[in-house]
Image 1 (cartoon, rainbow, N blue to C red):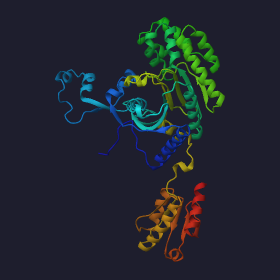
Image 2: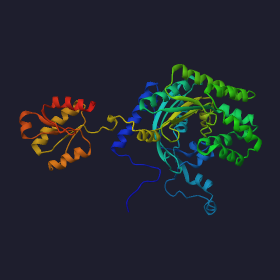
Image 3: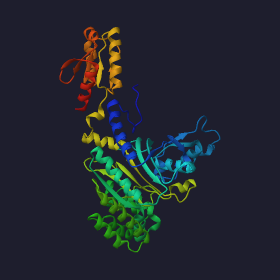
Image 4: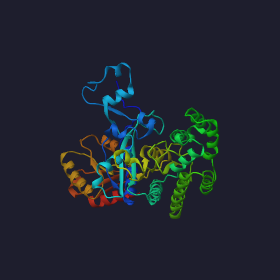
Length: 456
């Protein structure tokens, strides 16, 4: 039987990895430009760290790891007989794969608090896992590229992060729309419609408005316990339109009685005006339906979508003032963003935005004519590598056609030939695979030609 991989996961070959590394290096360089330092955390965390941080729906999507050895030892037989999955899982699984990078980061901050200089700016590029139903743009294993600032309440951090997002996608050549909201505004809306206790139900439902439409969202709100009057009051609020300034004015007028909402609107005004004063390549839009469905956001909420490709969110984030409190460190404010590298990869593929050097591998391949010739070729190859030229030698003394076929199949732009004549002169014959042109050159001359060829 042919081996396979789990649904929602992918293999990446050399060309794909070169492209992915282009994305990672672009994001990493911008993170560094904005003063963020890199950390890593383990792939698995204690379930006690993860559970209860992502809401009820998030808890269901956690991949849980069975305890080592006899994981059923000491488990009440009744739980097994009754198929009580929830309680049984807590007995046989102590660890889980991380769902995102933010909660492990909060755990990291609390655990290492005495070693960190606040405000602490970190970035992290690692895979995460979700037991989701795989579909286009949604995977069970995918990379996140996160940047967070903790230990500061200042909205300067939000303004900086939005500039950072803008810079990353400008470098990648992707046209984006950045959607903004504020959790305090959502709380004010819940107060306004008379359902402050239903905030989570409201946010989980209205966050799906782009996917299922307003009427289906209203249907779900009814199922979640909101009455018809509350739903009718909510409709015009989440459907406000106009420019960002006009939307803010409408919100301010509608939610004037809510002190919480007024605070959220003031924060939105400060962030938006701060970003606009610095200039933004992306489109910035206030989206009152934006909730991102996660319990830990308390202020600004950010979501980024590609304008030229139909795909879900490619970056998201926000402020989470209370996150470290669950680990015994209350009062530490944080704000962060997460780039969805796998979706960005799909966007760049769809728009063919990779520069030619992103997929570049070997620049020159030396042909193998035998023991003496190989020894001479390897000395020249070493010289080329020292000059930064990516090169290889065909390991076996095979037919010329087979060796050239490999160079052609791998799109290697140059082939170097070192035979008896070349050995006698301390030179090599360099063949340009695109034009077929051949030149007898010294290694130094070949390095210059290959370098120029790669630049083109």
